[in-house]
Image 1 (cartoon, each protein chain N blue to C red):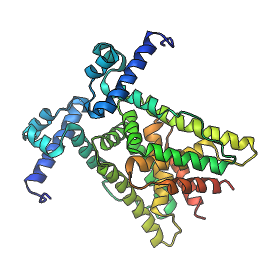
Image 2: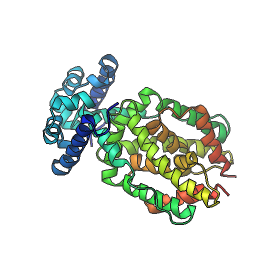
Image 3: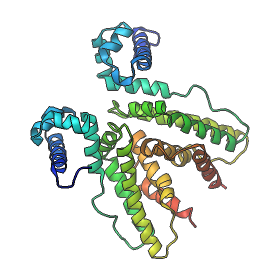
Image 4: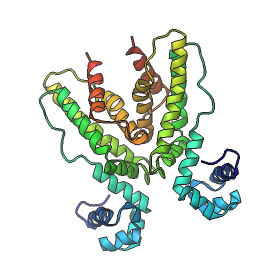
Length: 182
Length: 182
């Protein structure tokens, strides 16, 4: 394992930053390992040694970008919290940038660990919402139920049926999973 | 539009066959357009002109392989039919070959039409099962409900949580969606 703050962490930070900057400047499809290495001021072989290939590097960068920046907002009750979180998730993941990151995360990920990390982020955010509900004494579904019946249908539409999702869809999935609790 | 049976259809057939054969012989990661073109007895530029790049070609081949070969089996009642279909879907799509095809179908698919086709195949098969149930006078959920609460959770696990699915999981999702109808 690399020591945090050591050379390994600095290389990762520089390379990830180079990918993000260059993707904005020249577009994702024009990225190459030599281009990224030059911007990050490392050798191409450093990149190949650490990430294997461009796709694996893009997958790691995508997962970093999909990491939630803050816990879900506390709006005072389970329905409001879960609705707001689901609407925001669908909006962000269903945007062109979100879809590109999800695709990158799924590719270049032979052992499935980056895809698993994406799901773990969602589970963690949902877990915060449900734990708050439990603290308030509200009846709440468990995390797995919300993953299966709210997160999964949204992600399925994002990936397989890009035109079929909007905030009303997210709200309906949340209403159904909460109704099923009663 | 290409006339069925014309040169265009023959080229497609030859190129798809070449991809399938070579994937078995040398492995998917060793495929190149020149290799495929040579086996299909067409020029590389024919392949580039028609498909754009290797990833787009692999996406088309993957969708062909994901096309269901037969309608779901008729076992006499909705519960049995939907359970059997869901178990088989999870088994096939969750296999290493199935996951590779789904990933290929999702990539090299800039307009989302191949991903949409994958979802349309599932919707069609589910539609057959539900129409049979209606003919028998059984109460059945609609296709969208089954896509959201049976197909989507299975696909989410296949893509994002590769270790968390088995036949019991498929049966539980079907039982829940049918219970919710009562």
